[in-house]
Image (cartoon, rainbow, N blue to C red):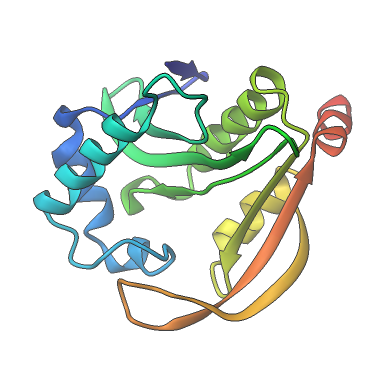
Length: 187
C-alpha cells in the first residue's frame, strides 16, 4: 500500500530502509520524544522493526495498524515514519504517531505526512476519531497537531517511560474528530 502527497510517499517498510531508519532514529533529539525507541538505535533495532512491520501487518485478518515509511520522493530517501494503530472499527477510532529525521525538521514534511495519514484514516477506513499525543516539551509536535486541528483533551502525568533517556514523561492527549477535520479543510 502506498499513499502519496506532493513531496512524499507513505509506504510499507522494506529491508532496504535499514540505513535510513538508523540514521533517522539514532539521534537523541528524535528518540527522546518517542516512548519505545532505544538510544543508540542500531542496525539490529532497525531489522527487528522492519521484520515486525512485515510480519504483523496482515495475515488474512482485518488490519489494526499501519506503519508507513515516509519517503522523500525527490531523494528516494526515507526521512521518517508515521503510524496509524490501535484501529478499532467498532468505535471508529485509532491512534498513532510520527517521527522525522532531524535533518528534515522544519520543512513541513511532518504536517504533510500526518495530513495524508488523517485523510487515509477518515476517508479510506471511515474512522470518526483519531487519538494521539505528545510529550510535554515537544513543542514542534504540539504545534503540528494543533495546525492539523487536534485539540488537547488531557494530560497524563508521568505517563510513560522513554526508553531512549529513561525519563518518565508527562503526555498530553490530543483528539481529532472527522467533522472537525472536514470543517477545517472547508475554511
